[in-house]
Length: 111
Image 1: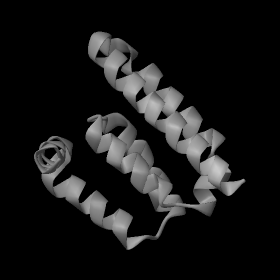
Image 2: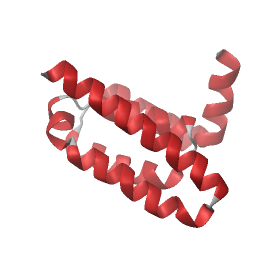
Image 3: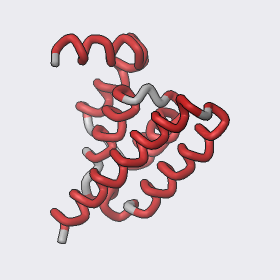
Image 4: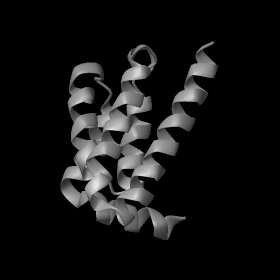
């Protein structure tokens, strides 16, 4: 059951990030509503997130990849409540130091 929850979470959250990114570029005024969909998705999987807080690392990765500064603040608040993982803290530190744009450009060069 846990594996199914994990796969469901990752697919749904990735789909919503991509949707927010694509539609947000076309209709910037819809970005807030699209981020609310992301928040709803995370809320739907709150039990899973409490069980496996590393999925918040995954959310941070998508904040970088899709350049979603607004949702980053929601994830940051959630991390403060749920996770005490040094890997997540390190990624947040990199985001704070280098910013989403720089981290994305560096990861594109690596790929």
